[in-house]
Image (cartoon, rainbow, N blue to C red; front, top):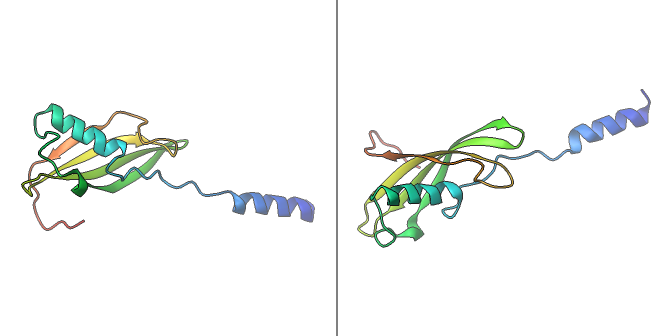
Length: 118
């Protein structure tokens, strides 16, 4: 192998940009939007009893399951205008193109045990 060939191989290996996990943690992104939709359809919330400015989304896990496809788990915290929190866990697939590569499974957190801080 010539020096030029070695240089090309090394440059190819080290200059390829690393693909990061998709960031779907915006309160306006797919996991939070679908969590709200499922909660609304279940009669747990309405458009009028939540303070959407206080909605937070925390990614708990992201695992690569295919070529630019990641299974992600998020904790979505909604705050009612009364101040009470309603929290859910979402599971869905995302890519770097879009967060909506699959439907969203939504699990309502009924009761928190222990001291969990975000």
